[in-house]
Image (tube, rainbow, N blue to C red):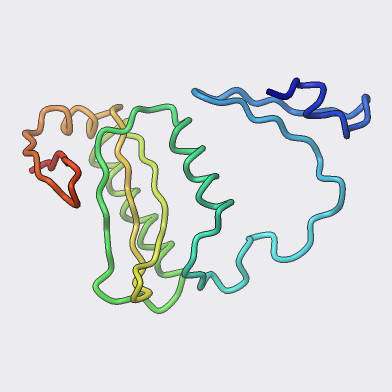
Length: 155
């Protein structure tokens, strides 16, 4: 295992780093050695059908370090692809706002993917806090087997 000194030996001793402690991890950040170029949003047309490794890791990190314990996950899939990313964003925002209004104090995590046919869908993770967390904990479940893996289904 590398020591902290070895890990950051390429940095000048006067370099300021930012250490952020999360629920399960610590992230150390410092300015990049060169200016970033390209689209600051990361994707020029938002039409990417393949999630990058960096994006997958960032998503896993964020979900693992959320300030809630996730109890349930739902997949929300469009019947056909909406015309553009802006429509998807607006629909997601309205849906989450309506959940927050109905279930006070609830916390969510989500990520957007596309099916092989290119249809947008969200994975929505629901936390144990607030009214929705209480409702999920009270809900009856049944166990099914999917692809050889046991899964709990909420009614």
